[in-house]
Image (cartoon, rainbow, N blue to C red; front, side, top):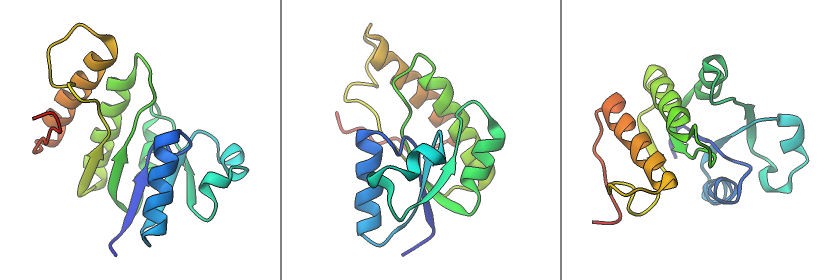
Length: 140
């Protein structure tokens, strides 16, 4: 089946569903959470490896990426989302992550004046710069 998939934003609506679907498919999943104590009490993440992670602390990112080879990148809705994504991608590259899937928004590649879309666009530009990746857009 492959190695471990690190899922960020694992306690949220989308992240917890990604964890559930991957686990159900037999994938080895590591759920990145702010607090393992709080996440342990959640039915959403039962039976999944938990790791505490702070988007701003590289040492927690290093720990989260240990022995993982794939990343589902989901950042919180925050004015720092682009910075968080950049931190994750930088550490993922250092850790040798082979595959990243980033949740985004339709139209994030468009030059529009809407903060949420602007943050995704900035994160994706940083992602491509750091990772030198192929970008696939659902909107094209």
